[in-house]
Image (tube, rainbow, N blue to C red; front, side):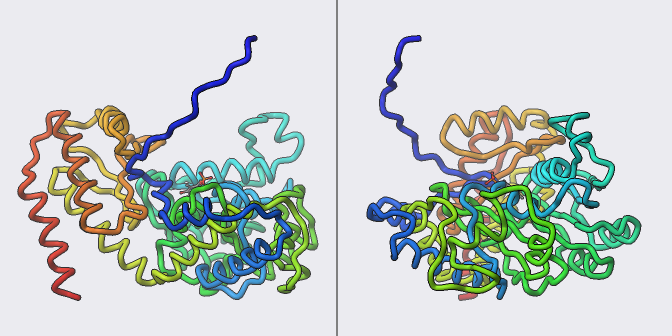
Length: 414
Ligand SMILES: *Cc1c(COP(=O)(O)O)cnc(C)c1O
């Protein structure tokens, strides 16, 4: 084959208005590009990692020593957290959309024996894992969790906090309480809620492991770190049983962030080659989030999501989600079945909205890092234009008047 060199790659600036990733803040990009060349054991890189660890504890609302970032995407942090599940372990996992569905697959792979894997290598179904499927568009409730845990008494229980596939918030308090009541170790996918919802993980003692991501609420896409946090109970389990991974080892990975033998140490130890650029970007993303304030940021998301929700309802859509970073909707009856066409046309124009990835097909519009009246109005206008192109009859004066009223209330309230 002949050697091929392609022209330099250009990627356009789109409006990332989907479930994630969100638009990365210019401050984060500047920190990334402005970092000097320094190796992974250079003093300021290590200081940056230790400072990130402390900022992450504030963001997660925890005193857990084992709080740090796992290099990679959301699923890297989840892989680290779920690595504590060993072949043969009993697990109950609650699934209500695409992402918890993939987490369920990870859990089945990890809890599988060699025989389970050989029987179905890509999609093992070990008998020791119980998957409870909650229909798309519905939330996992505390009552459901309590009932199933009472029946199965598993070692581990798993749930997504916010399921981005269907845009649903699941009952964290109910999950934690049920885990405590039935002696299960709770594991939570907080990929979509950290940095958006106002919660402190130390308030949920039934949950021993938490995993999030760099591209949603924390807004640090330049491939950085998936935040994780583990309680002493979780770490004790890992120290007792071991896990079958070096790179995502919940105890060993923490060494580079200055956590050794359950304690903060001033001199971190090598685990793998971290990037000074990534650390600088992650550090700035955490500073931005904490400067905004966890509670204020949560209020801002709720406020702007309500504006967008009302606008799409005024266009004739029905909203089925209850997350504050994402609106999941059904198109009006006369456009039903044309969701993918609408999304494809929008994406071709640089308006990055998404369909749902599992049935039923719905449209997802996200507002990550779009917390202003101007940004929400822009999203509203672009979405309305897309619907009108397919023949929708929309009273734009009414839609925009609704947005104006929403934002006027805010000014009046200030
Ligand atoms: C986005 C998402 C993931 C996957 O994150 P990646 O960064 O794509 O690896 C997992 N779980 C939930 C709930 C998500 O929203």
